[in-house]
Image (tube, rainbow, N blue to C red):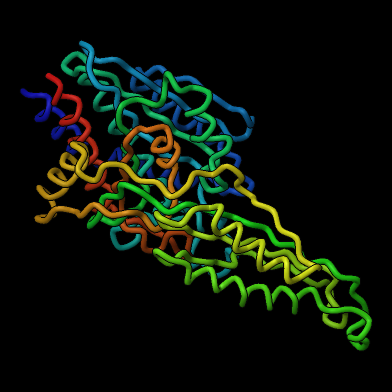
Length: 389
């Protein structure tokens, strides 16, 4: 039996086991903030131990561990990196969900719960890909490394960014596969830059019946929001501006003395972070009460790698064998940890489930899509490694 036939056999025979792992993972709270992923990391370690896979932990922040698991094949070859994250978006108001946001229940062919789409589905898939490739190690050339990281939802400083800068020999590799939600129709070979900025408006404040005593921090913030919208018209391609958090005022009959805005600017290829920061500075200069600071200082620019790379072919060909059409390579709207590898010159590609419902109320992932993603990545990884023989 060929390696491919064995792999296809495991993919089919262990479908129930794969889904049960995803459901159990969903029941573990890894919301970020606060970002504590220690329980989930233990869960993954137990799986790796049961599969006979060695692993170690890098935890620059104790509550945000990162797992590295590597194995070498029978002879030298390419080094493939598999990358997924443990942390997920916060749940928000639980009362508006139809059920328990951490239930992992199966409803209409979907696993229900926070983070199932982003990206417990994808990280689970790569864990199984890693274990199946390990079973084939005596037939494979090269090396495979699984990186399961924390802190992705808050910028990656203590996760993927830490690993590529402090464990480069172990985790950079020759190519990266990532399973963030991309939609089955696309393979992502690049992404916009994430520029997160905090604006702080400070004025004396006072009683609302005496508006001549002080301006309102909230009104100034509202004017700032309108002015920031001009950044969306920058060329050569329109960036986006999202007012993610707004906090101002303490009581209905008081003039707000302070208002804080956290704004997410997404910058396409061709617009630099410095250009947007300069535009922000020009706007803020018109408002003496406003100051600003960058929250993800040093975050990469918009980035991309070769859309005709061999790995794109492996992904699209294997996806097409099940879908009946080939996914198209595009630049991602959302950010992923793959940017840290691309900025180090390593090609990195994203293929995952539909992003529909990601971070929303009643988030749930299709089990059929989960199995498709697992299959596509397993076969693409095998093809990539075997291409050197």
